[in-house]
Length: 80
Image (cartoon, rainbow, N blue to C red; front, top):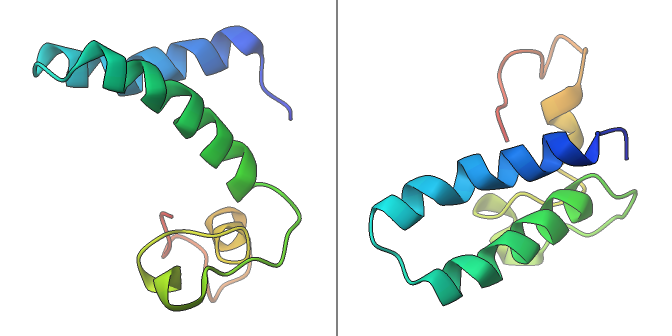
């Protein structure tokens, strides 16, 4: 992973703070942070998982590389 730990911590705070302000349960938010971190790592893993019928609803490691593509077919068209 090529992120500074402070960058990752700030990103998680930015993701969770609005939910806290909206009144979400702090226990649920405490569980969300590790989940979001794991999910981000999973999306960038070199795996062939596509999640079957859920592939159209949840981004998978197979689909996510299009977010980083420089190929014309996917460039600036996918914000997964």
